[in-house]
Image 1: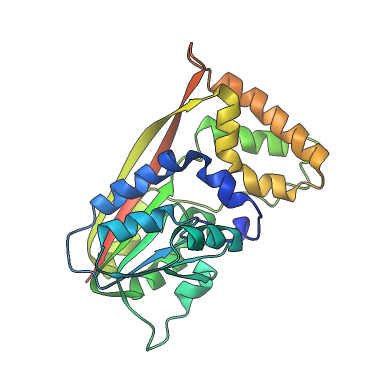
Image 2: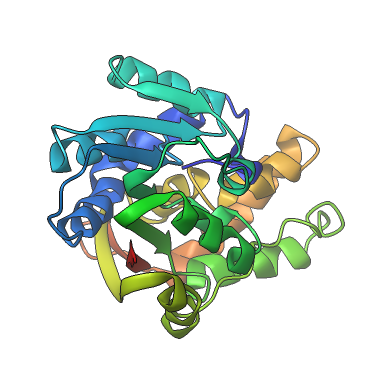
Length: 269
């Protein structure tokens, strides 16, 4: 699940799996939509701590499954969880661009909640399709929540505090709508299935729980860019105050966090 913005962060895997059940449900839904065709070789790119790899193994139990991620911390967690799987430390963009003649071709490639961290999707996605065997499937899930209050507030706070200059280069990579991805992949594939789902995650603990959720994703590159712990504490406190207003808790303290996600299953011709 990690790449350029999320590498070499000790403890990131532990933060991420605080909400493992909620974060894993979308990958199960994604894999359930992959056509039931024979799979000999499968790979989980951006495998994170291995929760998505477990789902991939369950979907294709007879296949040779491998994984890669750019975060050593994540891979340590994945190897501890699934010691029988071959996990590789690699940058996804560089890996996808390097397609030697004898490189393996995959019947199923899973990219769950990772490609949103990478830029230049128009040049990233076609080489991923090239990595597929004929009739193989590229299964992608990306958060599609940049217009949600949680992200808008992050951008506003980053741009309007004493840390504005430090956070000027932490903007998320550009993402597109379903129409764009369909048009990009359709000429390369025999079938492209695109859909969008909004999950409502029930988080106990009010605004604190929402902040903890985003410490495992969107908050991470911003906090990493700040110069010291005092700034990180101040930034997080301001974000928490804004989150409490944007996501009021129910009577029992639970917050329903709306989380839209975009799904793609593309089958190579």
